[in-house]
Amino acid sequence: MNVELMNDLIDWLLNIARQHGIKIKFENDWHSNWPSQGSASFKLILYNPNWLPVYERPISLAHEIGHVLSKCEDPNPITAYSVDEKIEDVGNEIAVHLILDYCKQNDISFESKQQLIDAFDIPYYMTHNLDNELSHNKSNRCVFYPAANFSGLI
Image (cartoon, rainbow, N blue to C red):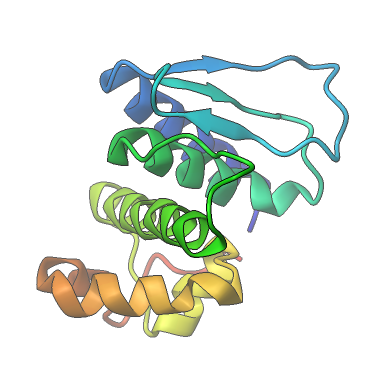
């Protein structure tokens, strides 16, 4: 993902969070290996602006917004693995939905699903979420057509 697109998407996601009353806390001195975290009960995201690799920052932020918006219970070390997996999947589903909304609002289109995946560095483990979102929400299909504005996104 190019830096301009990444920064614009992060700004857009931060605005979405603010619109939903989600507080974002971040510090410029956090270590690069400390993952962002969200708390639905506190409507709070601890967003790490130093996370490496850099290209994961937008999808990570979108995922944490997904946790808060879905009002999933906060992670619990004694929760069964299957419950935690379901909570993570909900965060992924909303993250993908947010990326598609960003594309629609910014008139960004692609010739294929793979171009979308490449442009936004959507991880392999989220591709089933993308498939689900596209099959259940036909209005998101509009992001796929021969795209004049695709060049430069990757």
